[in-house]
Image 1 (cartoon, rainbow, N blue to C red):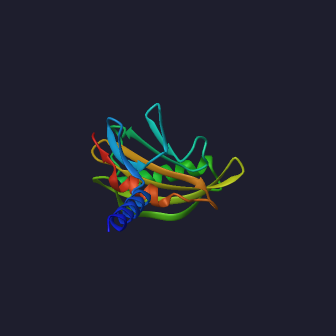
Image 2 (image 1 turned 90 degrees about the vertical axis):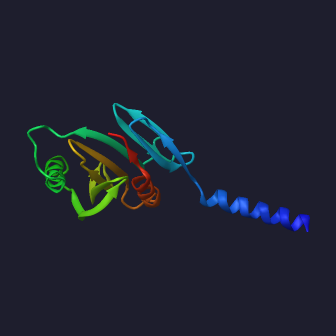
Length: 164
């Protein structure tokens, strides 16, 4: 009986560790539950999460201030950003127009588009939130034919807690 109980406990522990592959990480201005083992780096206020160094799949997060003279709502700001980006990436194709979602505790907008970058077709999924005078942006970037981390991207978006 002791052996059956020990084996059951081992199986249960193994199953839990395989499904619970996320961990809490605190970065001062925000905290997030991210995949265990992923690299996390910060460069000039841009936080990058990736499964391995120099991965073609990354999740980035950053905040920027809204200029005082800009009073547009989030939807309009996202449209202006896409228009501006289209001038730099003429082959940009919107896959999914702005739809409502959340970024942590804030209401947000999600968009998805593709563009050719360095001869690779890349997919960009972005979530924007605009509480007060800041815009928070979470982006998942991957080669369009190899996007394997949507589950992790949406888990990060859902669990993010931003301290403004």
